[in-house]
Amino acid sequence: MVGSFKFIDKIISETNVGDTCNVYGRITSIRDHGKISFIEIADRTAELQIVIEKGNGYDSFLDLIPGSFIRAEGTLGNIPRREGYEIRPSMLEVISEAKMPMQPNPFSLNGINPSLMDLFYQYPFLADSNPQRMAIIKVMHTLQLSLHEYADMNEFILVHPPSLTNRTLYSPQKAIAVSVNDEDLYLTQCATFELEALAMSLGKVYTISDAFRAELGGSKRHLGQYTHVKFEELYADMDRLMFLAADSLHYAFEAIYNKNEADIRLLNDSIRRYNLAVPKKNRISQIDFNPDLIHPDKIVYITYDEGLEIVHAHGSSTPWGKDLSEADEKIITRHCSDRYVFVMEKPFEAEGFPYRRKPGAEEYSLTADLIAPHGAGEMVGIAEKIFDPYELLANLDAKGKLGEAHAMWYDYIIPRFTGMPPHGGIGAAPQRIIYGILNLSNIQMTEPRPRTPDRKVNHDLGLNPWKNNELQNLIDDYGLE
Image: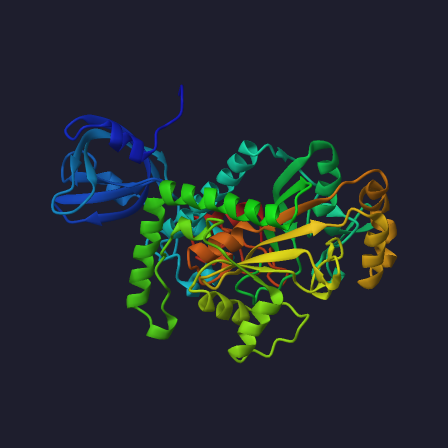
């Protein structure tokens, strides 16, 4: 075959009703009504109905199992009495036949239903075929692609930091330890160690790469493996970094608004159907996506102390020096008329050791968190970084991490003896962003194969829990169990 196949939505847009077209698709359902039957096919872009009239030579296709791939050639038409398109075929061809039914049928499951999370975790191929989960992946694609575009337009150079490291940004208990070639290492928590040194030569650098934390699966807002977006820029102060964080997300949110309208419509329809079936207390809010809310001019800016004053007035007992809780973040955004809020100048004791302290008030750090108004909490963190080696070593000492200095000596501490200028960075997790803007009930829905340290990758469900005869014969023939 020369060239690529075309997706269904493009074929529909290029074909007039009454003309002939040629489509590939996966069977999602079959409805046999005797004299006339229907095969529904779909790809990631659209659905299409194939009309099978009894006796036209295609009756055998009604015996296919959902999941099978077919090719259809025929006349394109409108579906009577409802929105959509159909084909009356002049040719049908089986491309790949499913050997066993997927149970339950992932094409008909409502993928935003939180009760399905364990099912999708155990059988990820069901999540791979679910329309709602695919819509979420497409929104994620737009977000990350747009951040790459924004970085390129603003002269940032893409770099790829290693996943294996000998140091941790926060507590080692929050890191995932691994042993490789007789070395005790960690999976990276943050790319800041590598990006800061690279920025000395390249000026502006960024990465969109994997990061890992030992987060337990009980958290609705955390993953053990996630994507980390990091921008690092020379000479950037707090104001520049907050603008960069908000402006980049505003660019990406506008792209989602323009490119993923059909995906958001599908998800909102799925939320509506889910809400009809559950008690009011369990209902999910509709996606009300407004990119303008994250424009740098629309964001509310407050200090940590001002935020603490707001939450204390609403009954919070969070002490000074501690991170704001999820409940605190909701109080603050509600107090600020459900807008995005930058909480600035967080206490040094609550932040990482690489971050500068506020001159003249060293109990504070030159950091800020962007809090989202939809319960997602922290969406982006920004920080001015230390460029003086003695200040860095003092911070390591204050955090009880001076014993780790040897592990970061040559590629993190030494550059500060070789002329490192003032600089700063922003960090964000796309999964947290998508979790928030799509009103998902759990961040694990943003990944088809979510990873958390308390969930085994190798499960003990057996190879054939469906008791499918053909599958069992294969297992027996090859001695797989």
